Length: 282
Image 1 (tube, one colour):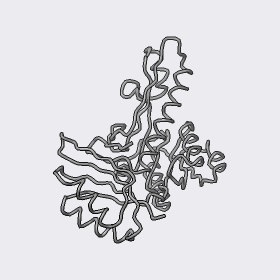
Image 2 (tube, rainbow, N blue to C red):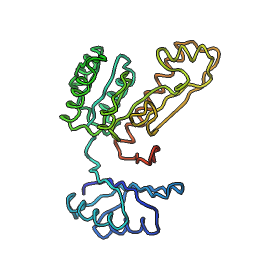
Image 3 (cartoon, one colour):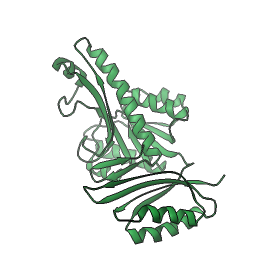
Image 4 (cartoon, rainbow, N blue to C red):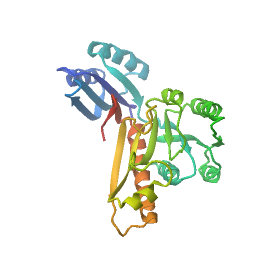
């Protein structure tokens, strides 16, 4: 079977882009297996994701030739080998529902990732990591040691060649510098009560206010806390009969599902940044 590639691109919108890309692949013996496109009339930008099989040219040759096409259309583009799982590092604190869910989905073959390491500021999940044969790194974080801790985290991320960093309920605010270092490759998950119910015990606060919706948001990490480009969101209904424990359990389930979808789409190169928003080719 010929290797399968995924080409993602964005550029100023103009007639002939789809024709040029499909014709380019046809001329090189490529067979398009999946294609999606989006024209953002607000920004005048065009976005496209194409999955294709091609055995007539090497990846290096394809990259060189795509670069020539991209120059003509002023494209920002990336080419990925579909068979390669995305190297991933997961950060977690003391709530393990998202971590446990991601590890199970990964080992079940439901996520195109390769979990290379788990980093935590607590020791709670070292046994869970060991059960999946994943290296566990305990890096405590205090106000006085934050810079050194983040340097260690970044060293692990880079040494593992991580293309994706998942904050699976990692309850530490990343510095602006680390956010910049991880731009476009770090995904966070949080409850969707923000900014209404900040701080500790948000589900207690929500229960006290009698909320009728609970939910979760997965987004890319930026220096603007919890305001990065949104990848996925979901909600669940709540009513007056729900206890705090009910809301918390339902919220954790929603967080796990939303984060898993965001990780899946990112790992399959289905998410393209569009300024402070995202284009998601599901």
